[in-house]
Length: 480
Image 1 (cartoon, rainbow, N blue to C red):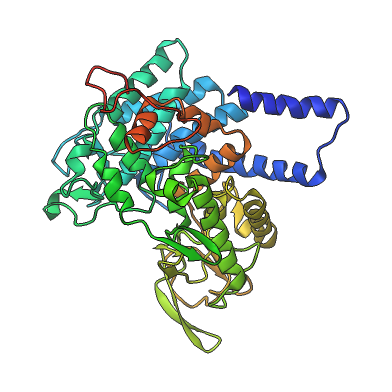
Image 2 (spheres, rainbow, N blue to C red):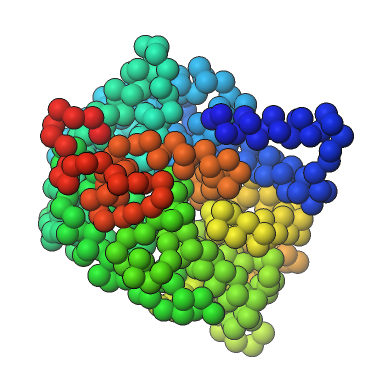
């Protein structure tokens, strides 16, 4: 993007004139350069070029996560702008990915399909490209995939056959998702569908959580939209409360405050609910981030290591589902778990995930970058290695005699994950870039689908303007 190039040129000009940046700022930029490059390399190097199926986790054997694919597709654009991969190579990778999803079988036969009614199964076999085991047809993971698809459709705007095909496939993939079908209890959207278990599960997406972008995509669909009442139903279950000095709409794991903002600029973004509270979605996520940091500083449960530069609870790997006695007190630990802390609940077993701070960089840059740098410096290559931050660390868990679900235990520093997770790598890469250049935010402001979805939900923002003129979604022949 021109903005990123101008920023880089400014640094070069200042350097040529002998004007140095403050040492702290230079160190911060060098850290972000290294962190982003390593995290980008996770997506670029672990994803098969022939089909774009980013693994759920690495180096452990795993299926592909369609959500990780969505983060990866968007991450490739960061790689182009940062000069880590050329545009032609990135467009070739993106085109292979979009062709795979376009051509993969859509069927109600659970054994011979990658998806159904435009949705895709949560996990796909790396080699077969078909549904992995008995996983669900996932609305939220399909939405994450579609955010990456739409980002690529906006970015690759050149007048050449390859980029034109990317735009065409992105349009087709988004149009064929039948969002209104995924509403067995309309106006809410269901979490998933399983053919073996009677179809739709019992759970719908109710606010506040990561599903904000799901509803925006569903509302903006030109072919299978949900009604605006869906947004009202979603926000009707918001939980406004104070937690450690911060009043905000609560959701305990930080990923719920971050996922939408990976693509949609939350600055000045208000719906009816937050407009009445006098804040925007950026400020809400800032408060949630600072509340978690304050909780860690207070450390009411006495977990080892917690403090102003070691904090961050979100869904992540953990050592094991077990109970241990720590300092004469029984403590419960978990494997993969939706950790979090808010007024609504606290799920904390001493496991900190770097993506919790990394996905909040734009909201509180000083606090988040200090925490990330401290984690890197304190734990070295046990935590910060080939592809940036491994998924999580728990300094309290030091029992090497327990059978672990993931990771390794060091008797001095505790448990550390041995995997990188695609859905945790993605927010670090994208939110660092949004903080530095606004790349993805500016790109997605051009998306008619995003603008239309926000407008139909009643959002306003300085960058959104009046929105599309139509009150209803476009007809079949209009552009998304």
